[in-house]
Image 1: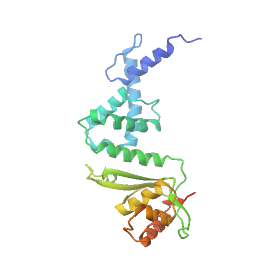
Image 2 (image 1 turned 60 degrees about the vertical axis):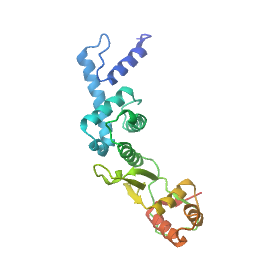
Image 3 (image 1 turned 30 degrees about the horizontal axis):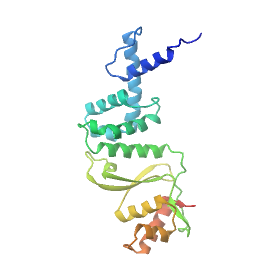
Image 4 (image 1 turned 90 degrees about the vertical axis):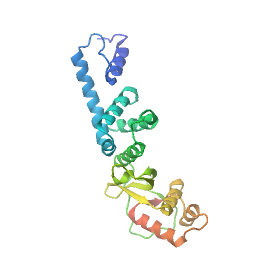
Length: 238
């Protein structure tokens, strides 16, 4: 049987109505069926978001979280309620629309981004960090594939409610067992990690890039790099 020419348009109309909290069913669809479909769709999206952002959801009143989810469904863009796509689309929507939600705290985007990043690394296909027993090689070094350097203006990684407002420089990485870890860095460590995130460097080059005025001794840099190498935070560069 051949579908009618207006079938794609009808499907699009139904999909748009399902995303609106107060929309009426299209002509010919029983209200109870339409409401059932809408509740099932919203439950699928909501479950994906709750799994991805449990901390962020707990940081704000439930009614504010529900309103944010409804706004995302009504105005956001996401191809399907698949587990991999919904968190990405929700984070992008919140970062774009946060100014329109005056009731939401300023730390919410940072909390959402940190949880999104840990989730992204957890499901990444990048090789696991490899703990090295041998000494730091005399070769170019870079941050390993499953390592990210990130700055947040709130201590979202500590799980406190509300998160303390302070600059936090974090290394977020999958360790050799596959667990995602977050390590807060001091300013010197953050500068060194940023140099290695920008390009593969020899140890002396990394030291010069991080401390152009030689604020720290090369021996300090060497010791820090050796620790990171042993833990699998670093990999040989090209």
